[in-house]
Length: 241
Picture (cartoon, rainbow, N blue to C red):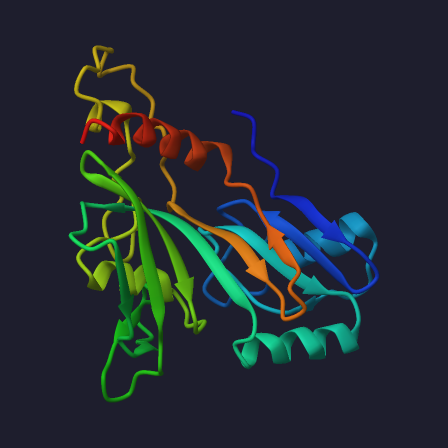
């Protein structure tokens, strides 16, 4: 099977390198990840850059925008913007279930619990302030497509908050369950061979879609083909739900 590229370039100038990361590769060094492949080192080698500075991270299994700084000054300015929450972030996700709300905000405090699964948990006493706003775009079968707007950047924040609302992200092995999505699971008139059917999606259905910088510049990352294919199929049947 042909392996998907680890990234595609969104923009590249003297100060930043922004890429659309594929699911399955860590952004930088991760003490919990035993794989040797890292996005920062891969980019340094591919672009012959001596040192890239990590501005922010997304989960290994999440796809989408990652921005690196190429200079110390750019790193300082961008890092400060993220810390001060003057950078706006938008994610696209597919969840299990059909929420009764069209929009909702979740502000449950979060903290890593240090277990073998490296989970983040809800803790109203020791947890850090965490805010995520969810917008339901449409519902189809037993799935829904949402946009998430996190105001804070806790580890696994969107995944934990979505799960806490009773709607875990599709194919989330930590906060939900791993269940590859097949067309037969939501298309009523499906008549294929169940023994030969291939999944439409079998990785975490979470994508970092847009980052808006303080200057107003919007950096957008197209959704990967596997996730976009599932969204397109769900959209077709949503009108009949």
